[in-house]
Length: 134
Image (cartoon, rainbow, N blue to C red; front, side, top):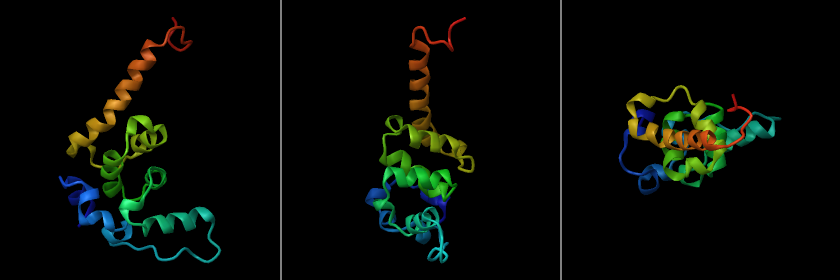
């Protein structure tokens, strides 16, 4: 299954067989063990790619999205499993994703837009904000 098929799936990852698979299994690309002497960051990334999707924490999703890792698989999972509007770090990671086919996933795009529009509205209501004074 490629990432486009995964993203288009109407079944939730938590209730399908995909949840038990890792990014390495879903993408068909296994990075293998980290190189000898690899930094903790590299070791972590290798381990996260082998962890089942259902076991990834929100912070794991953010880290993987920030390095541009398998956005086609991770964006739908991140949008579905977390309250994006309540997790600024994840929201920012999702906003930085460039290679995901947002235009062909209008419902997912709306899930991302809603918290952004809400935050923008809240900023507009802040009184005495030095950035909004004329």
